[in-house]
Length: 283
Image 1 (cartoon, rainbow, N blue to C red):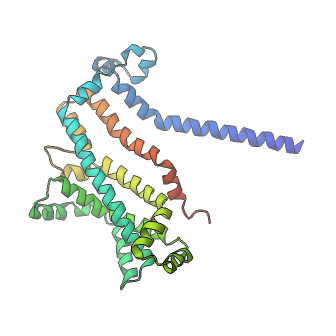
Image 2: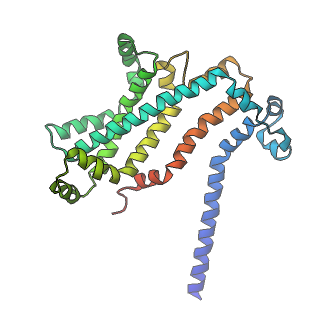
Image 3: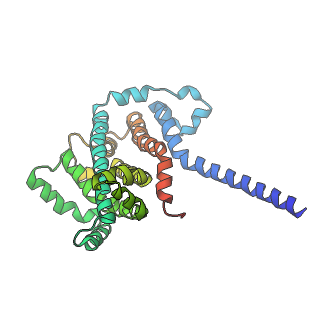
């Protein structure tokens, strides 16, 4: 009897947990769903009431807002600018961070531990501290208000975390595995590309997701360093609100597109992300 009661209690608890998690997931997705439905409503319908009215009057749904979005050169140019900033900034951080992480983990060179402590110390430096001096530096070398300047700033502040994360992950690789590869004649480059990178895939994917989300959603750095004639999407949407506060038919689809792209990237690599986060938690 007690065994039957325990099984019933366990199944009931498991079912309650699933229901709770589903409710939490739905609550988390509610702003995204609301923004999507708002982007599919006309300006008059948006002004008349909340997005939940589409469930009683589904005829409100239309794709005219997205047609207006595609016809808005400011928004489309800003999306292209965001891609041109985010992709190089993410790739450079992943590539340089992987090389540096491997060097700190498995290569001997003078002052290795001290240099790593410097990298760890850079993690606590806030972005705001560097805005004024870096602005002056970029102005002197001619890359202020350029895509290159924004990319370099994001790479510089993304590398300390990247090196810290990947060095700790690569250090968990069994030494015997690397020594066996060296006995087979593998050099450092081949060892890095054939052994370390495949094993470090989850951590590298996690780093790429973190960096992509940070750069894509950034507004402070873009507001200062990006070209004012072709700003990223975050700055462009803010300017649209400031200049044309009532053009919700452009702002809603623009905001949804700006949000759904990083969400798609996250869900596309969620398995690698979870593996990277949980790496080292279970031996």
